[in-house]
Length: 97
Image 1 (cartoon, helix red, strand yellow):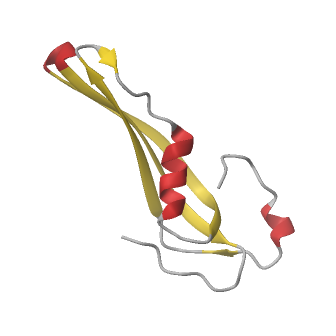
Image 2 (cartoon, helix red, strand yellow):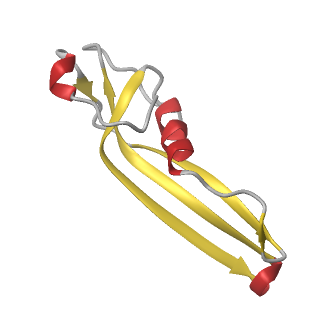
Image 3 (cartoon, rainbow, N blue to C red):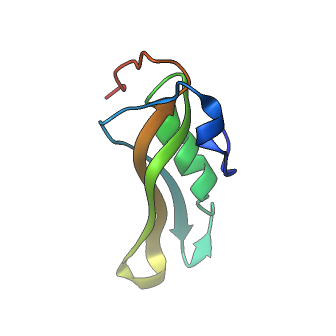
């Protein structure tokens, strides 16, 4: 699993799943100090883990969300990745819920 671009035409019998999967990576902010920074690659890896055996995500979307509860007390920064898994074999397993 990687965030690198790959040439999907070189894969031969790659098959795209029509059901979308999504993954999320969360960063927390406590008292105005970031405790963890979210990472888009981790969000993509989380999405691909929901479709075991997938080699890539196609038609992907990456977006971020942020919120604060009582300014500077607690908040979250999130990366969310959605896409259709791509498999290197003609059979594709169903994604995990």
